[in-house]
Length: 404
Image 1 (cartoon, rainbow, N blue to C red):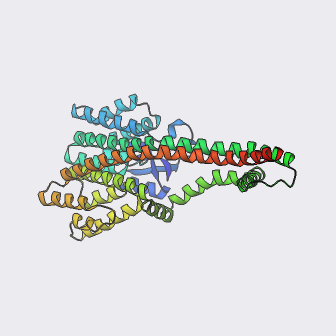
Image 2 (image 1 turned 135 degrees about the vertical axis):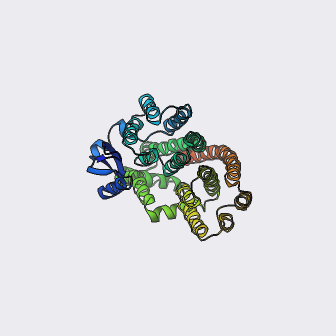
């Protein structure tokens, strides 16, 4: 995706300047035309300008939540939309959001509605956000929709924070373990090998683990560029592969096969599906559109594909609950609760209860995972250091016995 600056004529015929993110210049022009904006000049912003400095960083979730909640309050108080956004633009601490809101104000003043203006900034305002805003504008309940959006974002942020908190300490331990292993292997083991050889002679027989550690140390010191390439280039290549369609599909399918990770991924996806789909339905977004937007926000390609397939069946007149009952990912309780909602006309309310239930399940699972990972990583760390210690102490002990 590239960023383009444009000069155009708005609906009222007034000149309008702004930026838009699109795959190409032609796509940017097409998007502007779809929004009834007549482009006069569209050019790509230089990569140096668009990717350098603090202003190009992503808008933090907290900043977006604060903006959404405050905008809801101001609109509910009867303050005009442009004035509300201008006030929030002036007070936000996010430079990126400040730039985007400046463009949004200009768009609205030139006749563009809020949803279409926010859609030009997909890095900040997701399709879920834009569709709910559009539904709120159409139904005249923008303040209520913004309030629900803020609540939804807070729920997502809380889940991400819990998962991050549960994995941070084990990851720190892992990094420390790897660093300690390399330091000992590169600097300590060779000196021990030299000492053993000098005391025991060139024919001294070393224990297998010591010989293996010396060989590994020699390889790391002489072929350091290979090791560096694996540790630096490996993650880069892996991330690029994972962003491809085939890579994402295979990696997400792999996650759903790993015992513990599968449970976490599935429950997080179900909670997100129920919360987002309920919010879109309550906002008045059409069912098929709600399903498509929700599917693309679940974060797992396999689950997304399954939900999109269910959407195609719904398009043919079938019930969504009936399709989810055949799912290999969604448990029976989801389809049964959804069926009750469809029968009573309370789909959104029922799904909110499903979301609450699975968010509690995620909390309990993450807390349990954290308590398990920490001692496991300590054992791994101790085992690696113990292996090196054994390979060092073994030959020294053998030489001491020979001397005696």
